[in-house]
Amino acid sequence: MKLNKSLEEKGKEKSKLNPKRRKKCYRCEVESNIMYRVQYKEQKVWCFICKSCLVSIKPNNPHYRYGGTWKR
Ligand SMILES: [Zn+2]
Image 1: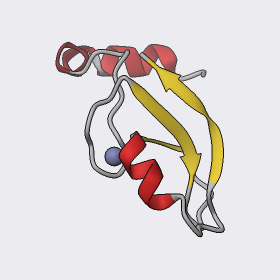
Image 2 (image 1 turned 30 degrees about the vertical axis):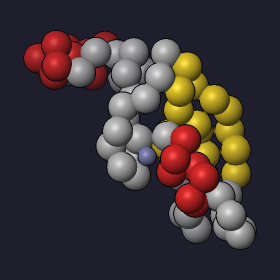
Image 3 (image 1 turned 60 degrees about the vertical axis):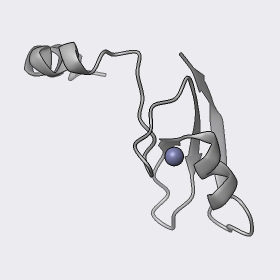
């Protein structure tokens, strides 16, 4: 994480509205205490999604890959 410093400075104003220890679901933008780190697209990008999205993207998805659970 080489960019940490500059990102923090740039994000100073944002961080008031959007504290660090919060994540939004990549799909539905809902905040949740528990997020799931997954890949579910052809592009193999890791993203955090909520439980209800996990349930809907997981079935029969050849791109689905689980990378861990994030808890607040
Ligand atoms: Zn979601």
